[in-house]
Length: 544
Figure 1 (cartoon, rainbow, N blue to C red):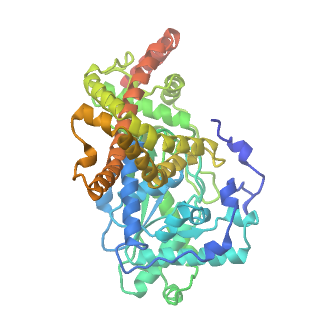
Figure 2 (figure 1 turned 90 degrees about the vertical axis):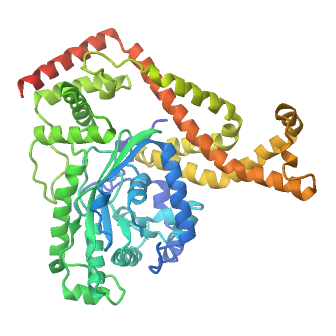
Figure 3 (figure 1 turned 135 degrees about the vertical axis):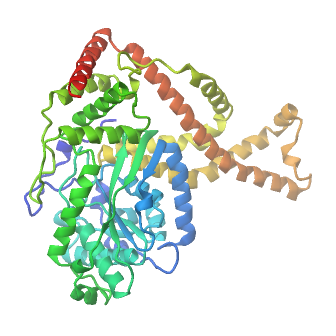
């Protein structure tokens, strides 16, 4: 499926700076103001801002789905998060809902959440987000395109920002993205001021009630290939930025104490924005292009192998690429009026690595596919074969359950993800939502179908295992009904297990596919690749 090209998505509408506004999907353009204005407000008396039961349930489901959707999940820096005050997390934004989801799932506190307005008005998703007291936010793009009046947008955003600020002041976590939109670039967009204004208002509320002032946490969100199923993710909590008491004047404290939104002083907002940008931009790839970033990742693999310490995880790859980026990049001093795209690196070593990385990328390979001394492509690990064989055999035995309970979700996620008009950055968001709500809606029905199939074939099953499952609790109508009900309940964890097993079998398939790709790598391309890598190794040796 070909997603819309960014050039095709530009409708020519500009903001007050003369810059193109983010493209709006059909869903984002459909503003239901009555529902938005009636969005339930959170409460701050319990452990969760919304319904405790529904919030805990959705977190549990999201954790289970994340383990299926990602091959590896690593988080770091959570020990830096202060537990005696609220925190507002800020990250770059390239993977739709999954950006906020990974931040929230790995944070030690529950979140008060602000989100794009249509997330609280969609038929199924909206019901759940309202249970979690998600607060809708109207972006400048919706306002300037006439989705609502300026008065409606100001009222709704003021109420939402005030609600988020109140939640943060009470010690909850929160996430807002300073770029204001999800995008496809390898660098950050200009920072908007919403997060800074929100955390300053939260600080004023905390100051008014004698609580500790909240912190702003810059974050790195690193997806190996964000739109792929079973990709790797590293969630990096940076060093918290403490809001200073001097940044919160008494007149702001007095204003927000009445429960209405008041704009923080511009100088405090810009001071905090500049500090966040200074700390946050380095936690993103921050390269001229994705091709240049792939070059740094490959260079990290080659350098690591030369030093007998190759990256052993996705996090290790990112950290090594970051060190090389900082070594070879051209210094940039961003101001609010500047484009945040870094200049292209002119170092010849990076240029050679970019060429080699593109040769690998063309055939679906990367630095992990090099052997220990970077002289050839890695051979398959036969030690994985026995376990893979067992997994595939077990999955084959459970295939009927997979086809009935999980295949519809996979098809739904694929169709929604490939047909969205929001670009490739929303692809996995739709797949995740299909998995989440598909489990809630489809599994009760699929479990009925599976139990009915078992009941229909009960005689055959009894002949095979010499046990009558229907009469496991007795022969009365109640006992038979109980047996059927218990089997129906058992289908839920079994479906979950089958989904997890499918993800592992998929890993085996991807590993096998990688081996096939290495075999198909043309000899001419292979010679060119390792000639370049040899030159890179010589350059690295001479630069020591």
